[in-house]
Length: 583
Ligand code: TSB
Ligand code: ZN
Image 1 (tube, rainbow, N blue to C red):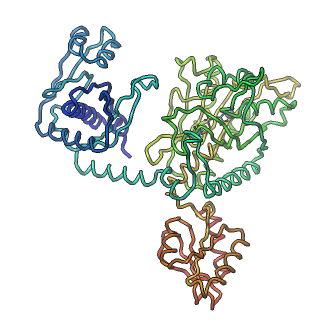
Image 2: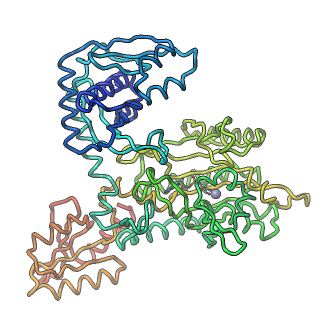
Image 3: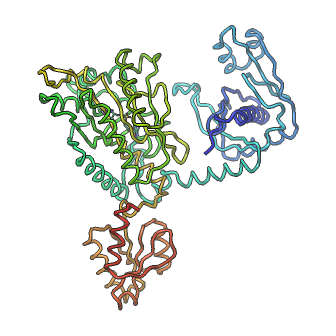
């Protein structure tokens, strides 16, 4: 989907359209006051104070109509420059604009733009006339706290988008519609994969049997892969004393993302946001020789993060998650090889899931953010240089992002775009010189000296929660055979004559270790087939007189209208082939 901010002219068009929106709102709500109206990747929005009023769906239509009217009128958009003093005078009735002006430096040129009866403070640039704003659409509205602070007043935020042509606008609206259809929250509900409940809370989804069935397969899949690659899995508790996080540095640099402390008697406990500290202790539990390294400690580990309630999203961003985590304890001379193995594992897993649209992001620290990042220039320089070297040697194409590193070190993140346009990290591989220091980890080298290992943090599936959100959107809920909650749905054509054969086939298929449903509802065949398709079951088996007489199986693959009749042996071979190819 298009990113408006990446196009110079579309950015100007959308910014001008935000002013048009404000003008229309002012016509319809004369007391309206305006905060900010920026361009965003998805178009534009404006935050508006409508006093006691809250918007309704119909209001959007009225405002849009008014915008069309103003656009037809075709007033020119005129820029004026003001001194700070003049600006304060001009906008004296508008506390929001006064706030903006007061926060500008004295040397800054303050400009405002007028179009007919409406003037707004703005840096610009804008199009020459409102006439140029023809192909726009208001998309939605929501409440938004003034300055994003929940102690402040809720403003009405109206979103919209503007294009150069009607065709572009229509294409975009169609893409939005398709994205909505793919949204994992919608499909998750329809296919009964997961649910949420206000009594549990935001960001805390409940996995239903269908979703849990897919997750179990994912867990077994990745565990098996990791065992083969020399990982050792552990179980550790999902809470610990705050002392542990004071040692690790989470307390100083990650506290805002953690749930508050639980006090019991004299103890202070916290839910863990990450598993590294527990795994550091496991490493430290024994003396290690240089010959033992790398040591790979893996865990399918529950973590808790206090994500903002406005940021949580279905399974994609949750407050209780389960990481496919591992910490690799390596010698400095093993960094490259071990990192390469992790990248190879990521690519191997992506091949199995047919993941092709992703990019590598080298996530670096923001030197100025002294709160988020542990301060040790030498350590950061070394880690960033090592990581860059590894990536260059592996010939991985990547882009850099300042301020996206973990507090303990730089990361290689694998980024994907979700159906609704979020840019999220799926897998991650991180280089850390800090935690070995904080936990005083050592191994004995070939000269009998104690030296520090390096830690690689990595998550391939990332979290099962986020990965599931991704899978749902990619497959539109039509999971491949090996992952589908129900793999085969058996339907007898006529209950009276074919139920017995259908029961026999179902039990044989279950005996072959497939997840099989038998539909004995008293409904028409066509209804049952339609329902099977709605549930996106990969294979629907339809058994009638011919199949009973010949001892065969007729089936339809999801997405195909064609019915294929085969022997049981051929059916088994077909299923095995599909599973093996992960289709
Ligand atoms: C890899 N300590 C490391 C670990 O060893 C760590 O926690 N890294 S992380 O912070 O990047 O998280 C790992 C992965 O969890 C991310 O790559 C992302 O895929 C996933 N993740 C992070 N936050 C959330 C969330 N709120 N909801 C769902 N998944 C999340
Ligand atoms: Zn970690």
